[in-house]
Image 1 (tube, rainbow, N blue to C red):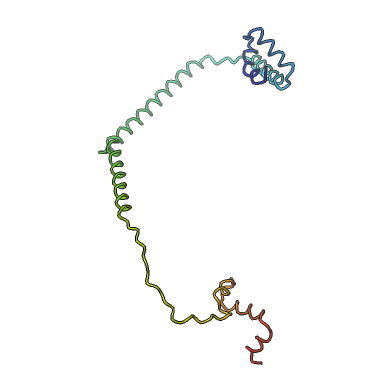
Image 2 (spheres, rainbow, N blue to C red; image 1 turned 135 degrees about the vertical axis):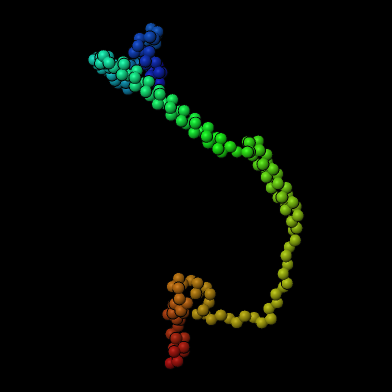
Length: 184
């Protein structure tokens, strides 16, 4: 016997409603499995505690008070249900729609068919023409850009001012270039 089967049959074991073979198997499992033995002990102790609790005697007028309270609750629930039904009835009369479910289904189907027809017409009417532009002929080559103002140099510096790349290039330039520019 495994633990799952023991737990499944444990209620019948405690109530002593199992067959002799099952009771012997359960007892053997209890001797071999400490987890199931602890479970059995806990359940038997809790049952012993519950059986030894004193009985509660209600007051003599308890039954009468309980019946009155139940009658009040039934009346309250009936009144609330009546109010809800009346409110729903008024709303149904006030907000009656001229369209039925069938109307909405037919409308949705019509829209779907119209969309399909439109897409078919649009897609079959499209030509696969290639737009060709007139060729561009260069008559004179563009002048070489300045080494200090190339777009790559300006874009590579995130300083926000275009003068900074020129300063960085000037710092790396040979000394003779700087002296030629300064006029010395």
